[in-house]
Length: 111
Image (cartoon, rainbow, N blue to C red; front, side):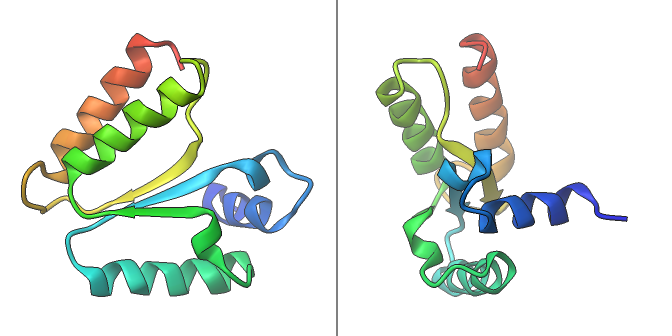
């Protein structure tokens, strides 16, 4: 039986799916971890250049700022990120705090 993650990855690889237009954000303070996730996504999604759908930032504050900017560019109607892969232990703002603030921001806007 296919679980949600498998379905998600399969949808990204299908050009006609709703998720084909969405983006992925990777949040990690270690460049090696970001590179590893990009490689894993590349082979899971089977896209030649997965970097075309990924944005990478290095701390939770940058992630929150990117979400706020993205939602504003979408006229406060939607968020372009369908998946955020976030490290919990980072400088500036850790992943738990960033996740809470992102959820609160999107909830306040009813997105």
